[in-house]
Amino acid sequence: MARIAFIGLGIMGGPIAGHLARAGHDLTVYNRSIGKAKSWAEAYGGQVAINPAKAAEDAEIVISCVGTDDDLAQIALGREGAFRAMQPGTLFIDHTTVSARIARQLFVEGESRGIHSVDAPVSGGQAGAENGRLSIMCGGSEPAVAAANLVMQAYAARIVHVGGAGAGQTTKMVNQICIAGVIQGLAEAMRFAQAADLDLDVVFQAISGGAAQSWQMDNRWKTMAQDEFDFGFAVDWMRKDLGLALEEARANGSTLPVTALIDQYYADVQAMGGHRQDTSALVRRITRA
Image (cartoon, rainbow, N blue to C red):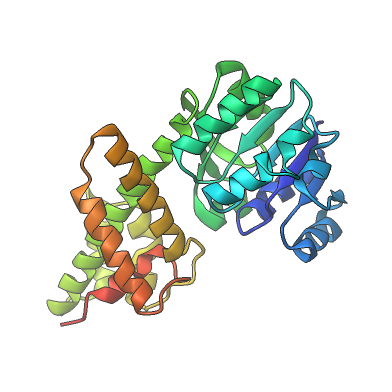
């Protein structure tokens, strides 16, 4: 079992760290809100650190799951950041969804210190984290990703090494581009069915076993019909992720016209007060006939 420092105990990080504790690893945790870290330690055991550097002092593996590029830079490279305390040979695994730019920066910074870095954003949402069924897309060297696999298997259903540094993050952007399009199509289809006075339960039964089937349809069709939007991954976070994809597209010369449009649709949902509602709230901006 490994000595692990875990940084960031939010709706994703908290459950992931819990799986590691149950697997028998020795955890030291840090969270910006110290109360959350103490509550986690009371539930799962382990130690609470006062900053990322203290958490990482004796760790063999440091895992982060925070919010933004700035958050990640602060906990890794800041004055009290983990990289300042990590020893050569330590493994750094980041589960935050951030830009490919900072993932590559951390890889380079890590290499200069003898730290092995893996960018490993996740998909599967809060339920996937709680159930230990996340899909993880990894960027980094073969040896680093192989070492990361040994611990990530405690909370993953699928782990794929997609390429070098930053490739995990760009693959996560692909994931979010796909999700945005599927949810918009689902929202339009639902409003069309309602305008046609169709029974939505019967429609679901008819189409969910064919080519239109998707995870979003299986898990959000009925809740969207009932105007229920409290299922974890918030509109604010989706806008952040789509912004990352659009920024990367400008850098690599690709075009994302539909993604850019749906990003603005999510801005409409934010203006309606849906900041913390889940991504299926996209249907709210299409009025019922």
